[in-house]
Amino acid sequence: MPTSEFSDELIIKARRKMEEAQKESHSHEVVQQELRQSIYEDVVTIFEVPVVFKEWDIIGNRAKIRMPGDFVDRTDEEIASVYALGSKPQYVYSNGYLGFMIAFNWTKNMISNDNIHDFTQFASRAIERTGPQCRILNTEKLHRPDCNLAILQFLAQTLDSVNMNVMFFASVEGRLLIGSITFNQKDADRLRPLAVEIAKSFHLNNAQEGQDK
Image 1 (cartoon, rainbow, N blue to C red):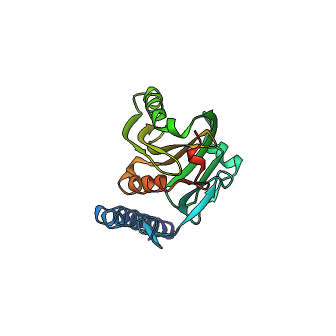
Image 2: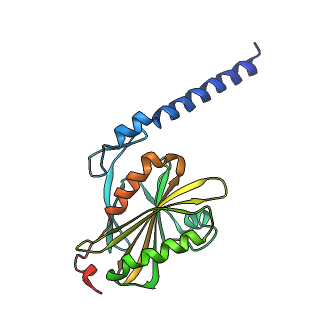
Image 3: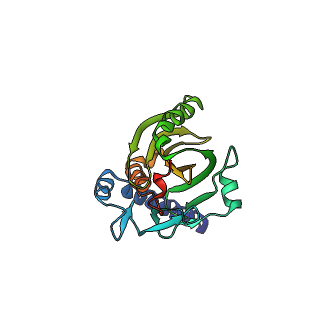
């Protein structure tokens, strides 16, 4: 057998093994086992990858949220390359191997803590108007001592895939904060519950700030 042909065969076999391993890590049994975990545990496995979560101070130390400890605060250039169209967030966190990223857009729009839940109705309509490919899956409104939180889960068509987005809203110093956790729909069984738990871990660092109307 020619050397090049032998090498090609080895490459094909290696690729098949890698694909089989990936399928196994995404299997129903693996996902069900991992769903019993919480981001508040010492180590969380995500598609059989061990991940350590920690509490991050974000938005200039105005708020906090639990994220993987090895997430990286992306540069303006990196953010611009991902959000080439439309408005881009000021903060994006991700790493090179987990299939989701977390973004924050602290807007100039003024909104009180009391009005956050009402804003979700406007946001839902705006998302659905972007096209038939966008579909709202769930809306959740949380009343909390430090700040109210609203969470929208929806699907959105991109150029080459369907993404799932867990988007959440809060009032920070009287301005609307939009957080979003984005990942491919094919990974939703594992990542959707994880993303919702991450969103709910968002809190203000100043416990009294949420009381400002």
